[in-house]
Image 1 (cartoon, one colour):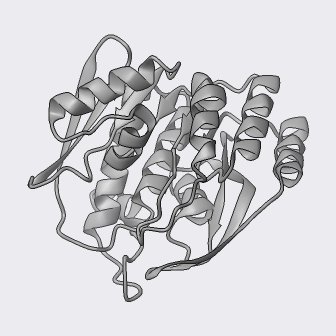
Image 2: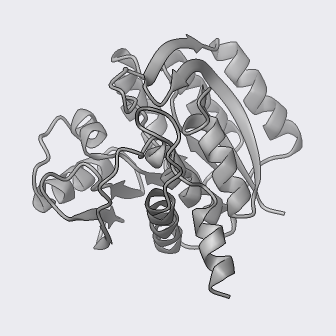
Length: 268
């Protein structure tokens, strides 16, 4: 049984954070574990409150897993502050975990900040050198690189800059591309660019897409597949989750985490 760990915040609405991660792990048939970094009061309308865990509480959770169960891959989501980021980075190094996916969660769909500004420096300095894969959307990539991203060439340049920070593979997601009927993600491995294109779905129900995508990448890496194969599966997984809408809540609704599996069952 392959195992995957998520180190992230909780979403009380169930669409993002560790809830989305664990659902995705389950759907892709890996055993999911979690270390909680913060509790949020959150729904489809936005984030009402954030209650961070102490760095010690995060450390103890990760140590509990590292000393007993171990993990085949892990992802980080909302890490909230510099102290937690540094602690997580040190434990990844201590346990020599290699299949590390960093989803640099900064802003919730409703606009609430989920990462303190001083934590961005810590993210660059301590965590990114451990990342096998980083999965920023365009706004997150802009913050991490300090550049504006408007074109496909901009995305490629941002990927190069992130690679130079020590990340081994960079996925810049195209969900925020302006004025296009397709969503174009790029994967950069330091040598080549690979493009993943999907039809853009006109919907407001995209809460948790970033968490779900990165969790799918993590689950596939836990199984031992290549980064390319993991990203391709994640792209297909999240496309199905967006297309087969659940229509929950009054705002940015969650995606459908079982859509990919149900489609595969129906086509067998």
